Length: 353
Ligand SMILES: Cc1cc2nc3c(=O)[nH]c(=O)nc-3n(C[C@H](O)[C@H](O)[C@H](O)COP(=O)(O)OP(=O)(O)OC[C@H]3O[C@@H](n4cnc5c(N)ncnc54)[C@H](O)[C@@H]3O)c2cc1C
Image (tube, rainbow, N blue to C red; front, side, top):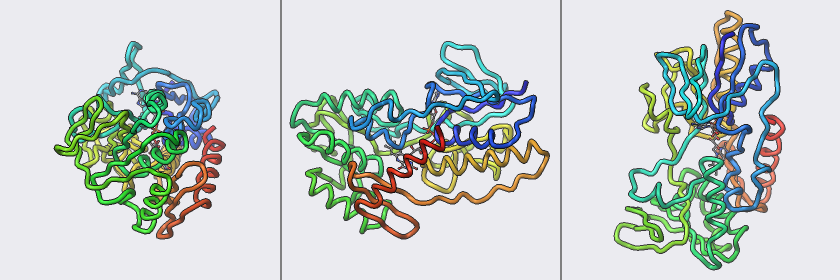
């Protein structure tokens, strides 16, 4: 039997499985999905798990049950591209004939001393559970700082405000404004929402180090009860360790079929893949669809015809009642984008689950 191994049952990996199962898989091939968890964690909602407004159970999607798919649950420690083998913590290695790497991303701390040690993260399910405990055990009227005013930092701060009206909450960003990658109008709306909800937004903060109860903005000491780091991402360590060509964000550079050029039996999907978009669940899904189409064509002995990746836009939440969105050049603000975001989540649960 040939092993078509998929590392990571996230947005990218699971989409590939769904799409592969829609077509004919050769009788001598089985799909092996590898993940540390026996379910998908809906990462786009981790901010709500950390804030305590949704339960762990609400964010799990069960993996598909199908005769062509088997599972290996464990912690991947390395990939040997020469020997075509996956190494695990405390388990036998797994050999592959074809491989998909879809292990997602982790925080990028920009070499800031103390950042990894003293801040909480929302980049993995288990670490987000720890963040939930940490944030919800902050004493009444304590002060939580969110480092990074991008999409996940903004959603984190807004959801925490909903969960803990007593807390002092600040977003610290090195740029001038929150959501700096979005149009000024949209960023101004979010800034105003934070003003109304007593969330401080501070720009031009250059964090030089973190300690147990303090953040240092160059020489200024900012006392804190908890810090959530949302100031940058990079592919997970297993991918960081791969000796292949990467882009400036550390993502693996690929050929037109999303394969590693020197190892064409290996696809890379999602946050680990160098595609012309910022990492997102949506990009991972559309790229996953393309990879499945390419693989089906190869199985049929046809020339694959990959299509350009088309993204629909971005939606963000400001608690459960307000939100914002960017569809092409159109900015959306208020209740409608929030309803749309809930709808997308509902569809995503139905599609993936
Ligand atoms: C708070 C927040 C909000 C976001 N909001 C949005 C949004 O609104 N829209 C959007 O499109 N995107 C959003 N994103 C980004 C989106 O979540 C990611 O881009 C997306 O999850 C990437 O999909 P992926 O398949 O590459 O990896 P993931 O979905 O992260 O899946 C990776 C899988 O690999 C497994 N894994 C990782 N390492 C190992 C290992 N060593 N051993 C075994 N298993 C391993 C993990 O358990 C996981 O199941 C948000 C992210 C965050 C953190």
